[in-house]
Image (cartoon, rainbow, N blue to C red; front, side):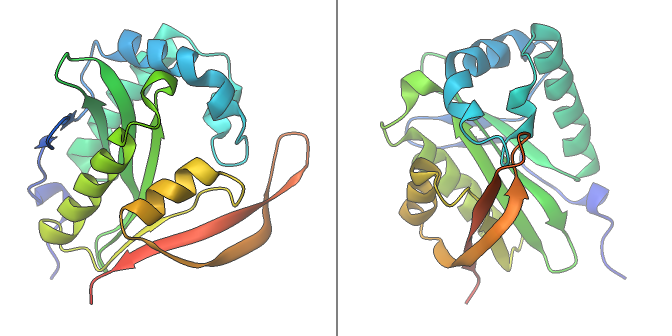
Length: 190
């Protein structure tokens, strides 16, 4: 009988050369809100991929996100991490979600604060989380589904060694009903 996911040991913190990745805690909402507001225009460019960015951000909504993410981490239904630099500034949010513990496989999602983009930090954090999924969580597959037109997210996927498997054409729509296509990236255990 497979191990109940809630009994799996999962690190609440991961370190890279420049970043600390840790699970959200109660009280992180204000910091997440600040990063979301700074990055809102970039996030809203992808409404079919990031529908949550279409809502008006608030400290309370960000605090709810942090607390729900902490609860999901305990249940092992989603593994959300916030990435902080050496000055304890929030750089990014990333997660392993849509988890299938039987395979096991994980979907990798991420966004980076606007002022910290193009510094290699998102790739560094995503690479660490992908590596952790394979090395410690036994992943057979880690996948990501950026919008086909999202060059930044696609570049991160490619930088961390994920392969483009294909494109799902017209598989999502924006709130205005505009069709969007989704890139399928994956890394698999060989």
